[in-house]
Image (cartoon, rainbow, N blue to C red; front, side):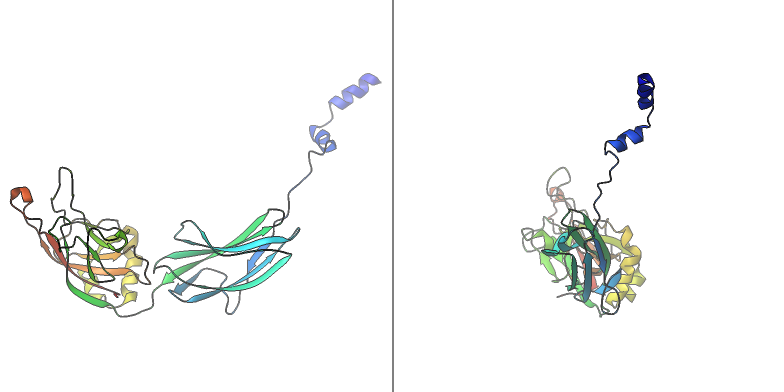
Length: 292
């Protein structure tokens, strides 16, 4: 009998053995629940909004175990790192809270609002929605006869330009204002060779469009739609510029509307200094957009 008992124990299913030892116990803790109030006046899903408009967020959070320990709202722009715009710690089973958020960012940005609830047991739940920042339709300003010089030009000839403030920017000024920036080399084997190319100090993106686009660009909505169509092809440098080129740009400045359309009216080039030149090269242009 003893031998039979030993053999029986040896062939017991592994699962039965583990269950007898308590190994099959499910220790998972229930997560809290968080939802967004829908209906008139509330925003609970993806939405298009103007800069400086408001969205109402109705937070409805509930603990399915102990009590909630905190709820917060975070904001990220274009998939970037999220920052906290509201945070609260407390100890209760539920939270019903309404909060308004005033839309910031620049036209074309996608803002992600996330609501995150944390339970006393350490479990977390969240929900989110996107806000696409769209422009109000207004007439564009026209600015004529502007210049970006060779960055090595003599003093007073600016090698960068601020489109919002409609003026040249000195080399020593903050990079955030340099929407257009001459890319001529200031050192190395190609020093002082005028590149006829723009970059920026703030992440401006450039894409060439047509002369018809220049003629038709009279409103913010027009160049916004133009950017939606062409922006995916934009690059951080303009490429070599020539007379009559039309360039659509979205600057890196944080403005309500930061899209401009530019027409090149002249490219003036002198020999490099080693050949008797003086670095007085420049690109002249007109542009349309919302300015200060």
